[in-house]
Image (cartoon, rainbow, N blue to C red):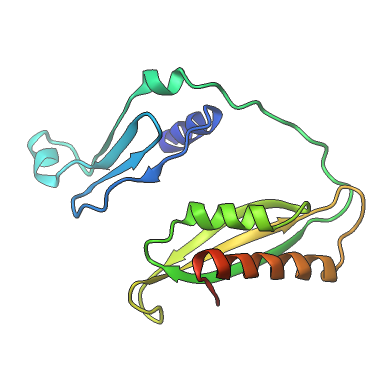
Length: 172
């Protein structure tokens, strides 16, 4: 549950990171505008020396995060009308970030796009070298009426068009 607490903390403080380096070590660096997060596995030999099992650690400037303004929590009434879920899987180049794709989906999705969740990242068998597959769950809802397929299909078509334009994405 510790990682969940850390992630929740970072969401409250509106902190988002992007991958800073692609080194071949077990450490990953993520960069924010003013500071970075380094996270990774403690080398197994070092862990063995200290008599501990598989261990991960991170370095984060907590003072810098605490100085950021907190996100305001917004609550909204649950719609009386059903939400419509659609999955969208795309192929993009391996260096395309899931965050950039998500931002394009949100921007193109229109007023009824309520949620976008990345649920799968895959590269390997049946995916060309240098490419990866990203799959998102999209949730559409209108608080004033039931959405019809034509409305959802139009929104998804616009999203697909923008993904192709902005990221040269191929729909799977």
